[in-house]
Image (cartoon, rainbow, N blue to C red; front, side):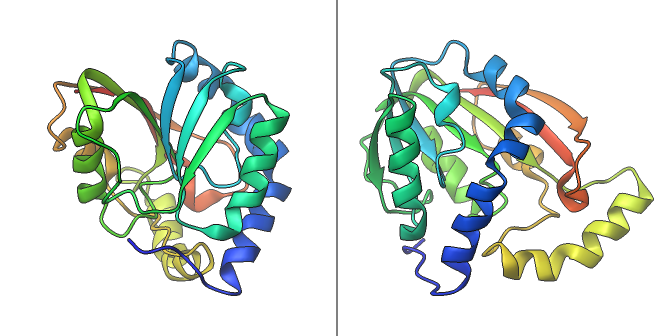
Length: 210
């Protein structure tokens, strides 16, 4: 995946994410605190965006932020400084990261696999950079397969949502992709978020262990 440089949607997306930061904290904050509670001192975060996860890392954590959009970088660095988190930005895609095999003890991925052009390749790449026993911590929205109203909502919203959010697909079966990703164990919690973002309220969270 090449660096995102869309002159309109890139800055708009960054502004939207910063504006919604407080609301996102109310929606996901408690779940992220639980998932991030025992992360190591160095973490790779895929799709770090404008830094929404920085508040959940322990002060002093080093985050290697894989974030291809240059429009996110300024806010990401500012939020990291605010939270006393060291950030090293790598402006590259998740499908091919410039990190060595077995580099990471933990990778964080929240609301990202919906957007990468090739999620299966990104998951394989996570497996490559994780050491044996390393963990992928994830939160993702997924395709709803059970509730007719949500299925219709996702179908109607899919095309405009994908355009506005630079490739975000509200109908991906990310759980299946994770289970097929070669991990020794995948623990998944399925839940329905209560938010104004109806197309992405069907979600999964958990930990995949290499």
